[in-house]
View 1: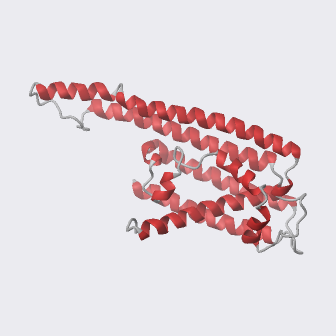
View 2 (view 1 turned 60 degrees about the horizontal axis):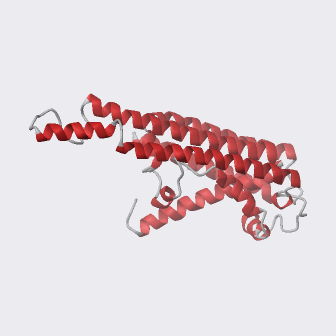
View 3 (view 1 turned 120 degrees about the horizontal axis):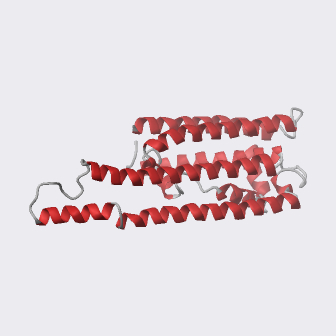
Length: 264
């Protein structure tokens, strides 16, 4: 099973790299004679969104098989695992990227991203030119996203705390009684009987549901931001930054694990 999970993630990384190359080409061409039209940029954004949706659909099938695996996925490096939220990035991170790119460091960021392709661009363009109505919409989306994140986080906490209650604790106590009475009906931690399998299955199903809810929030937040709030050029810049961040963290985390003798 782990092989299929790893293959899904590796395929997603390849798609991310290909999409990033297209986005960077679009950014670097904006001040040249081959600048992309708004329609072309919008199509590029929609292509990336389709890839997100297709990836999360593939994930959904795997999540239903083994939801707990997504809370500490073996196909991620240790640094990636440390920053996961319910199997992926926090949806509010998309919005945090906008705030970061809208700061005074935007020009330096774009210098690195596209070789000064936007260095002479007007402040009325790109993420630095977020309008007042856009800022209002971004702030509203941020608030609603944080509320939903907190709701899911609370559900995760409740599920984790429930390990000390039904249905697992009664099974543990029953096994203890059996051992004290020298019966041979089972051992603590025995995962082979139907009662234990059913109890673990209830937790697995709940965890799967939480990952699916988190994935829906990730998609909805990205879709609202990229399609409903940002202009095509702004959306391209945000997508490029997000993908570059994801791929860089993946590579740096992998190198970190290798330097410590982890991974292959």
